[in-house]
Length: 341
Image (cartoon, rainbow, N blue to C red; front, side):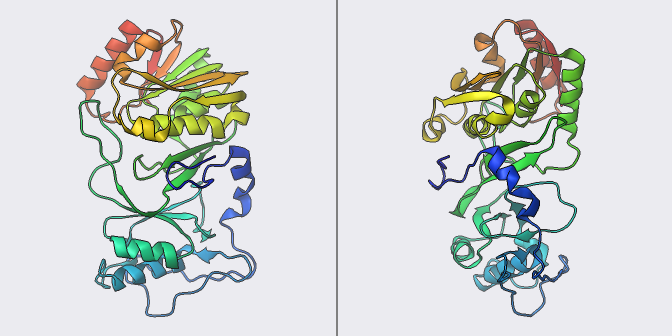
């Protein structure tokens, strides 16, 4: 699938990506790697090269190389701990019980400290680096349709990557551009997915609405669980677009024959936070799906009359008054059961 960020084939179908997982981050018999103390600067020794047999390198060795380039460019003083480099996001993200050996172009670096010169060098000189993103305070996305959106800055490469989330019916693959969507760490046990599966088992919905879909994780899990029709919605353009892409990537497991994406990434970006719902994509087959970009409080205008279950995974769950108001309005306009994961 054409990548809207770099133009390459960064998005593959779920079956292809999952088939590569068992050996993706495993060392070969010739691999060697040193474990470094993340609370101290890396030791003053040469950076190990990738394994000549398989091309992978232990993540601590990769981070030591990144640290040295950032120090040489003045982004680090050289006295900070190795962990000061930033946050490593591997592609694809999967639950791990041991530190990975990284193949080429498998790491997106999120860092508050990295500058443009170092980012360019990291992409050119560290083969495992896929993209470099400079972060700041806040979380990418939008908290409400009347609030200013938050994004990070892609400095080099491509920051499109996937996470693999386990469900009882099998895994779902969730692609996203990491500078514009929040981080989700896949774990063996995902409480949001488990709560969704309990609700589906209890209510057996025919139509499920993921009203704050993000990149589509809960809706995809609902489709995996056998819900015949899933409707996704998010006010943020990147969430709506990547949800559409994730429907296409997972279509075989979802029982979907065809996904039609009606809006391009560039088109959606021109109106990054939508009010009135806009149809972004449709999917047909043994199961059906639709993706909207819009304010969930206006979504009733485009919903079918028989919505059985909706998830309201709001950004700010601590605001009890806001959640109560939105929930009450949803029940009055849409009906059906509601749960907050």
